[in-house]
Length: 543
Image 1: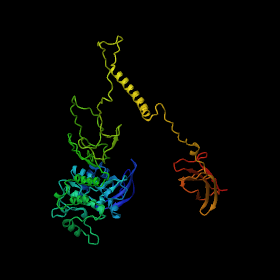
Image 2 (image 1 turned 180 degrees about the vertical axis):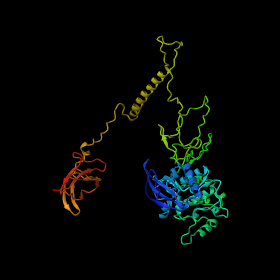
Image 3 (image 1 turned 90 degrees about the vertical axis):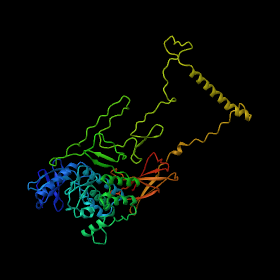
Image 4 (image 1 turned 135 degrees about the horizontal axis):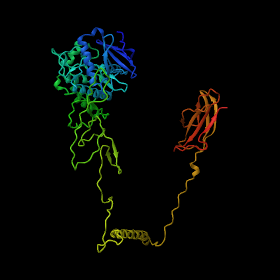
C-alpha cells in the first residue's frame, strides 16, 4: 500500500511487507535521523488487530531501552486511520539473511545467543512471552548488535492458548498440541533453535534433500532427537546445551533464558573466548538484594516504562538505596559510582579473563578493585621522636632531648669492621702468595672504539636511466656491510614524495614522471638501525 503521510517524517522507501503490516523507511525531521515505520495494513484493521498492535507498542516501549531489543520512538494513528510504530532503523541484514549466506562462527553464535537470551529474560521478568523468536526477528544495529523485534504475537506469561502466527521451524512441540500452550520455557526452546540455525545454516529439523513442508517439520519436532550439528569446531558442551534447551518436554529444558545464557557463557569460557555479559532489566529488584556470585557476567538494570505516544523517558527506574547503619569500628569505603553492573562479592573474585591486574612497587599483581593496606615493618618504620635521658635521667639544659648513643657506637663498630675486612682482604692474599706490598699489574685497557666507524657514509652516484616499466636507478654503497638496506622515496617537482620503500639491493625501477624528470631519494640504513647522515638522504634524477 502507499506509505502514509506522517507529520514530521519524509518517506524514503519500502523496507518490507508482511501479512499484517508494511515497514517503510522514513527520515524524521526533528531530531534528524532515519527510522523504520511499521504500518498496519488497511484490510487488517479491526478492533482485535488494533488492540494487538497497541499491545505490541506498549510491550516494545516498556522494554525498548534494552540493548538487544529494537527501540521504539513513538506510536500513533496516521491521517488515513492506519496505526503505526516509529522504531529504530537497523540497516544491516537480519540474521535470517546472514545465515542463509553462510553459517555463523562459533564465537559470533555464542555472543548473539547470550545477548538475545538476555533480552528474552528481560521480557519474561516484565511478564511478557515473545512466542516468535527466530533469526528473521533478530535485526542488527549499526553497531553490529542483535536487536530482537516483532512482539506482534507476544502474550503475558499467563500464556496464550493459540498457535496462530507461530513460525513452525523454531516452535517447540507443545505449540502443536491439541491445546497449544506457551510458557517461558517455550521461548527457551526457540532461543536454542535460533542458535542452532546460526551454526547449521538451516533450521534444526530441516533435512537437506528431503521434504521440509509444515507437516514433515512438525512430525520431526515432536518425535525426532535433535540432529548433531556436524561441525568439527563445535564442542560437545555446546551440542549438549542446545539439546537441553530444545528438549521435547518443557520440564527437561533450562528453567529460564538466563540459565541458557549462562550455559552459553560456560562454553565461551571453555573455548577461551571473550565472555559476553548478560544485560537484564528488572524493575522488581529488592532493596536488600544479595549480589549474585556469577563473576560479574550478569548486569541487572531497571525497566523503563515508556508511554508509546511519546519519545522514551530519559532514565530508568531504580529502587532507593538502603543506607547501612554506621558502626564505630567499620572500615571506611568510598561511595561507589551509580551504575548498573552487579559486581561479585569479594569472596568470589572474578576469574582471570575478567580481571584487570596491576602490579605494586615490588612487581606483585594487585587487582585494580582492591585497596592494599600495608602494615609497618620494623625495617622501614619511621623512627619515633623520643627523649632519651642520660645516666641521671635529666634532659639537656637547652631543652633539646639527648639522643641514645647506642646507634652511634653500633655505627662506629660497623665502620671499623669494614676497614679491618678491607685490610685483611688486601693483605692476606699477598702474604700467602709471597708478594706482600706489591700491587697487581694494571690490566691492559681495551681498545677504545673509533667514533668515526659509527658514522654511516651516504650512498653515492645515484644515476637514473630509461628502462622497461619506467626509470631504473642505481647507486654505490661506499662501505657495504652485512644487513645493509636502503629506504627509497620517489620525488616529484612539486615536492611531494611517495611512501618510503625498503629494499636490500642498490637498484630500483620506478614509474617515469609525467614532467619528464624523475627523482628519488635514497637513505642507507645499517642492520643495527643507524642510517646515513650529512646528507641524511641522497637524491638522484634523470637528465
